[in-house]
Length: 350
Image (cartoon, rainbow, N blue to C red; front, side, top):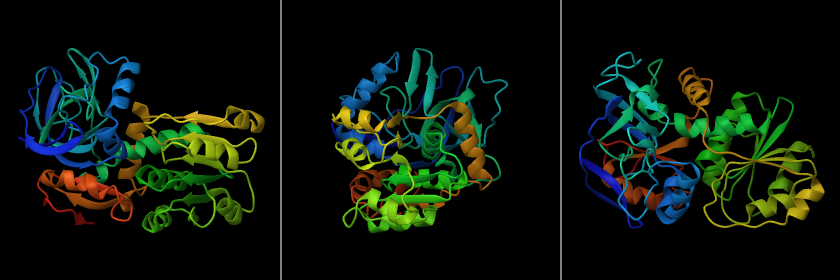
């Protein structure tokens, strides 16, 4: 079967072996899979994912020097139930999503960052049956595939402790920043200010529910927040993930500010702790979500409580994945591109 493969720092399209089901697994046909910012970063900073695998205690650490197929934001149609799947809540023909991990006979694998399990930039993939959730309410495959990135935002908002009556300053309006805005809006947060250099992403932020946007080339994020909010202390969400951001936050925010770090910086970074100490800043670093948050995100998308549809700006087939990775380097081109195996090799705007 065909797949888009990460090979020595480049994306190539080639044939890979068909999945072979172990006990407790299902075979699915990939229907949609989002290209994540962490996919783009991993292509060039895969050693950071190797370190994360080691810290996570995985039995089979990820080897970035060997071929691997990314794709961890997916939905798929069940084609076959393997041995030992009696009693699962899914059946052949169901559209499903799952947390991107497999409980293999040899240990835990992270789907999309594994040399043994093919991610969803492929025609078919194997999943742990017990991890699969049937997609409810006739939710379409593209929106269902947003469950994973939106669950990241749900987890971050939950960890932040933000409550009604408080306001949020979202730094970065990439896919995760935009998902944060949608989740914050669903939680009843009335003042949401988003900062991004990209005019298109600022426009998307407004469509997702931001009440004001800031161009940091014109004014700082905090100046924009103060202008829009009247000077209240924000709950800050960092969704940029590049060196220097944490230091800038420390120096610019008021004392007692709570900062939730969602952006995944894969390079060394420094800041002056004295500034954070003097201001008594509270940093909360987050990653992923728990199973309950993942399931509740799927439910919220299916019931229309969270509207994340503006995130999707393009669709591409497997043959177009390498070009899509390049296109996503320009924030004016796209926010979230969905890979659909049967789609055109050229990115089709949505």
